[in-house]
Length: 187
Image (cartoon, rainbow, N blue to C red; front, side, top):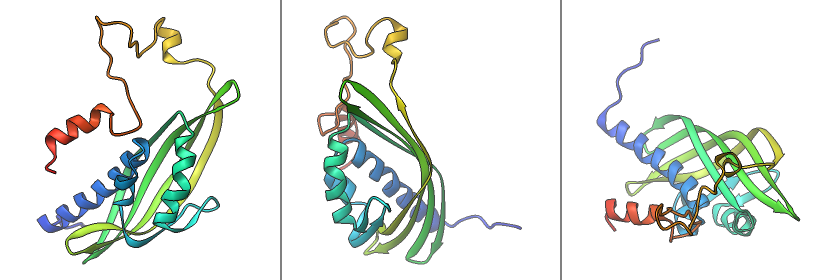
């Protein structure tokens, strides 16, 4: 099977679609609701069954307090295949995530992997999701028994050591990434 080289327009469309997929992960992990919602066209839908199925706006509203209660969320995507068909596209993207939650005095990592199966549309030059189907391929829950700080002998983030200033992560617009991306991206 021979595959022809994609055109510049096809590459631009695939890159724009990939950016939407990345923006979704960033929106969730930084608790940036507007960024997360920007990944769908108005009227877009999401199916994360058995947890949620309905409008994208409803999904984000349902998900927000769930994620806000977690210590950390980390969504990572890879292996994206995109099938362009004019102003529409299908995309399959593998995802893995870690959700860290506290229950009583114990902390747990929820570790999972699956795929986003997205239908995209380009409307007025903007690629966004029309419908997302999330498929969970595997998952497990692990108690957090130790962290890297336990092995290193000191906390990784020591805000009390002025000799080694730390970049402290936050799950909001105060995260240092907003400063960096704000410097690089036009507003």
